[in-house]
Image (cartoon, rainbow, N blue to C red):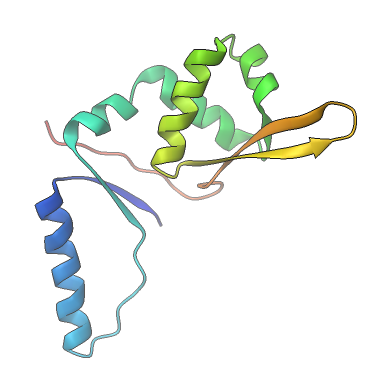
Amino acid sequence: MREIKNGTLNDFFASAKETAREIDQGKQVTPKYIIWMETEDFLYLLKPARRFLLKYIREHSKVYYSTLTQELNKSRRSLDRDLDILSKYQFINVYQEIDPRYGRRKVIESNFKNETMELRTVI
């Protein structure tokens, strides 16, 4: 399971130190996939429209950019901003593929396809 945690840089280093301590003690360490965020970034990420966009992308295996603009009735500027933020925190993968009929097409896929996502923050 991937985790997104609310915390500071000090929280991140404390977690890394704990993992290093386990390694030094010879304990078997399970791989962790954690993304740490500051509270302000976390709240910015959790805007309702962005959560809806993320849910829409997760429900489809592969979504084209043009489909998103039409289905969600979003401007390109707004959609680009949301996709940049979701991509920055590794929720989605955005790439281009070549289509013989349309030329290059922007494709969006979720990095959390069937995984449980739990987003929490402390205010």
